[in-house]
Image 1: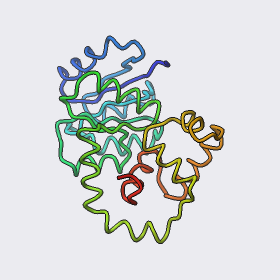
Image 2 (image 1 turned 90 degrees about the vertical axis):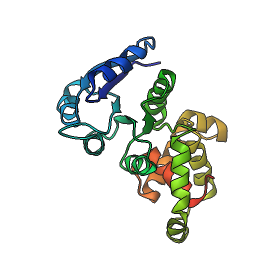
Image 3 (image 1 turned 30 degrees about the vertical axis):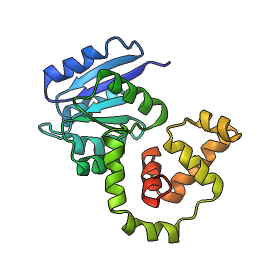
Image 4 (image 1 turned 120 degrees about the horizontal axis):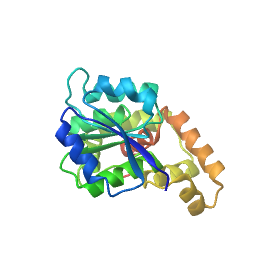
Length: 218
């Protein structure tokens, strides 16, 4: 497995040190820098170029919400994992819709943080089954009626596109999808790109959101 370059942005040095120390046993992860707020994070992005960022929300000078939006605008391939005490579903949906690739609570086990880092790096997103995905589905189903007519009337997916979309929602890689439905990786990636264009979303997270809103995934 390739080395994953990780940055952490949190205004509490003790917490940052604790996270870094708990992930020391995983030798495929390398922390490239620490930041105590969003502004500090952005100032070091170009020099260190992390693959994944662990991002707190409440920070001085620039909070994690603004920092996430700015990071995704300038560095769209960098994965952002929110690591916060805020469990409110509105925060989760807002951050995911603005490009966050995962949303974890600060009481998450080190094993889950490690899994989130690896999964977002390899597959583009990670949704915690017990908290994040449950809250995400609850909010989206609550608002499902207002989205359903527009999607049904304006966006049509063929059977193959729906099949690929469902497998993306199961966190399968392009290679894994190609093996399961007997298509070349290049063809699968072409379908994925077509989905991004059709649905007017930027990444796999946007595809998953569409799947929930349209009722394709229950």
